[in-house]
Amino acid sequence: MGLILGRKQTIGPHTGLLVEAVTPISPANKQGIRAGDLILNLDGHVLTNVFDFYIKMMDKEIGEPIELEYARGEGAAVSSRHARLTLTARPIPDGVALAKRFFQMEVSELNRALARRFNFDGPHELLVIVEVSASGQAADIGLRAGDLILSINHHTITTRREFSLEMEKVTAGDAVEFRIMRFSLGLFGNYVPRRYQIKMKASSQGGASRFF
Image 1 (cartoon, helix red, strand yellow):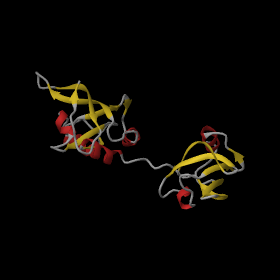
Image 2: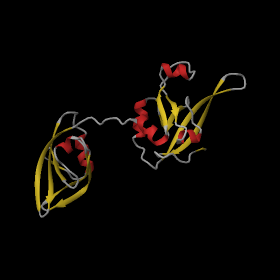
Image 3: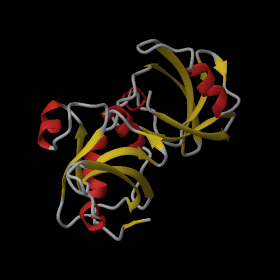
Image 4: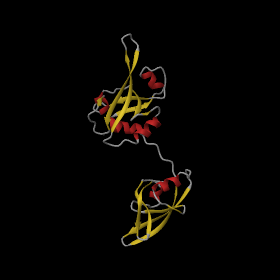
């Protein structure tokens, strides 16, 4: 739908939930709803708080029409309006692009081609670091191509979708904890898995990072 709602407020004779923001290219944006409007009711049901709104939205199916009444104050005048919206599926963010932006590293699911490239026994449900920028955080901390990402902020990661959903929570300036597995050559010529906990600060400019 594209609405971010806040507390209950009053404009003139109308009381409703404040629209704090409207997502660009969303049904609400296309209908002309904007920040500062008040949502008065949903399908005729008066909304008492934000939780009430989301509880009612839980019963909605993708594509199902939603009738909203909202109020807008323009100068001294206050008017109520109606909008007919549809619930749309929330797009999954591009976690790969976010990792490149914040940590200057390329990641991918461990497919057959990458398994051959990094000498794994075959494809697995794991995320592998494919490349690190020489001037980026990942390189500064010692990460390298072939390292496996096991978790982000203690959430296990096995697929690109899971990786993207966790990366969606990250904003610039956040300290993000990764659990990494690296296979190193042992004393007897065998490969030994070693696990590391690292922290990196989400920044498009790079920055200090460390093993701990």
